[in-house]
Length: 313
Ligand SMILES: NC(=O)c1ccc[n+]([C@@H]2O[C@H](COP(=O)([O-])OP(=O)(O)OC[C@H]3O[C@@H](n4cnc5c(N)ncnc54)[C@H](OP(=O)(O)O)[C@@H]3O)[C@@H](O)[C@H]2O)c1
Image (cartoon, protein in one colour):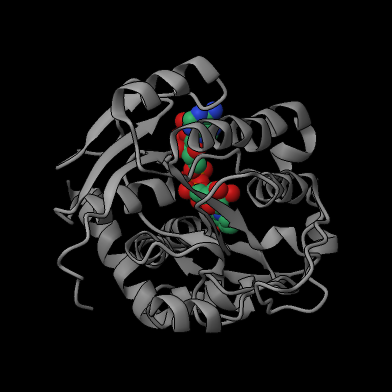
């Protein structure tokens, strides 16, 4: 897609830059000369090799640290990729989840409001109950677990704020390969277990539209590029069960799908309830942003290539 020449896209502050999405987004934005990017994360140093961007340590739950970064960098837009993302941990450690996923967004929202900065909040399919996916942006949220409730509360902060410019980018079951991640993701886990010949059990009664982190980063970049506001559903294009996804990954990567056994949510006994069928309708993102995620097989191939690259470097 052609860049409108005259537009300066701005000074972008990325939170959670060491995470699965954060790394892909920082890489994407830093490759455009029109973005001035400051990556921030909890660690003293970035877990990736930053090029064409700055990095500072910033714990989102410490309002004074966030204020200092706003004062020194003066962002025109913040993309909040940071969150407590482990769904079962959120169920058990509710206070920490709320401080990280909700109170921190309140802090960002207030600072954005007082400086005229745009806020892009990354959110989740878990704001829905999963009774009738795939979901459109206009469908009514009804979270079934504490993580989903915290992410919906964060969305509501933006919706009910006096911010001039805000956007919510919701996504689904993100996968990708990045260096130094603090948590696993489904594709990495399946790939590693199968490669080592270990049998695995995967739920067949949870349906998702798996999202390649690079596609999600592209979608968010489009939101920034076009100054889009409101809610956008950004996921992969295909709805399938998590078990089917694992089998596809095995097939595309040439791994032994026979090691995968299908199980169900009741047997798995996860701490937090999961919405059974989510996934997104992408019509709005395609129409308004020109969002064009890879088909699932291509995304898996790119994931496998990236895994090789990150392992060899
Ligand atoms: N992954 C999925 O399947 C999925 C699905 C739907 C929506 N989302 C949403 O997508 C966004 C990005 O998630 P992700 O997949 O990139 O997860 P991730 O890899 O867990 O990244 C989250 C990042 O947030 C950072 N973080 C946590 N608490 C922080 C704090 N107090 N201050 C600063 N940074 C903090 C983490 O830092 P550490 O590295 O130090 O832990 C981590 O780097 C989140 O909003 C998540 O809710 C994710």
